[in-house]
Image (cartoon, rainbow, N blue to C red; front, side, top):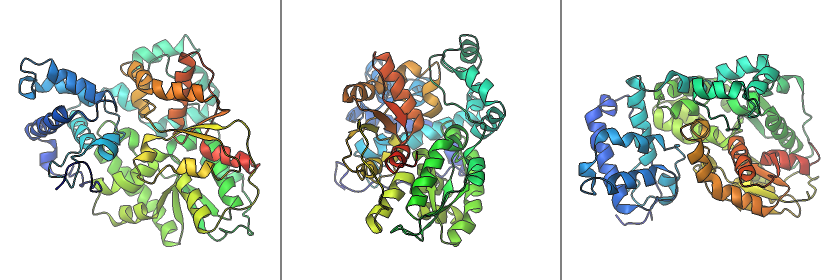
Length: 443
């Protein structure tokens, strides 16, 4: 075995149903084993706040070694992890198949799973992750929900900060009364039979964000795919469970995985590809679910049939060619590559897609935005999230492009806020597929 991540990283199943997974003594032993390796290496010092916290913790200990650090002091290190997977995939030389067998994100997940089992995750935090319930309720009164969540609302946001722990400065996604699934039923799109890629069929897994917060993203995806001859169906059985994964609720994620994979099974058997409209959800379908339920054949089948949205458009372009009609767009794009897009190990597909537009001017920013899902909006983490994302915001501001884009809409909002905090003006925030739709004259 050689050093330096020369072998492709592999991941082992989580083993969360084995009693040892929740054994606190065994967990502490593994934490100390891995933390000692990380402390000696320090290659990940600039990825997120977990590693600086760990190194400071050890450096400030009586012996400047891990043996004099108390286990109770590990929690801030765990709390700073956003499960972005960048340490595992891009930095760590000791990931499997290396004999050290180091998987830092899944170790943090295990710690949180133990916390959850011990009822140590606050109720308010867990309520923030109930995206389906919250989305359905807000869709009934979107005007009131968006008024209450606005950062300009000096009445409700301080209350949310006190009751839910959501920082009053953090920008929150807006809700829509007509979900993507509803709009897809009532707003059909004609299929271009003359397109080179005609004949493909794809089911769009709407995701909780696109369904409740970003239906325009879904509609742009349908329009672009239809122009390229792809017949689409929109299906949304349940959330992928990423919000619950962040809090260690693996059983809940497994429940959602079974539900969604069973709902999509008939489509896959009928020859449909599956497209997840948000990178975090594509990552769950492709990689996390098979590690949580490694023996589930429906989950395996779904993982093999799943695509990230930009990945799918690029695949059409490479295999068949795109339909005519793309026109140049003025102003250029500052494109952030989301961590969960990078974690899929498929390359910069959003950049590849946008560069298919004639005369495309795309400046890629491949660095963590600092948002980390619900992690970055909390009062405990917002300042850290802004600090981590500051280099990205500065790069986007200095790029001075007309559009600011990320496949992760939450990251785009966070970067835009960072630009504003720096005194700049962010570009128009659009998902890459919305920009592509504009180039086709579809939006």
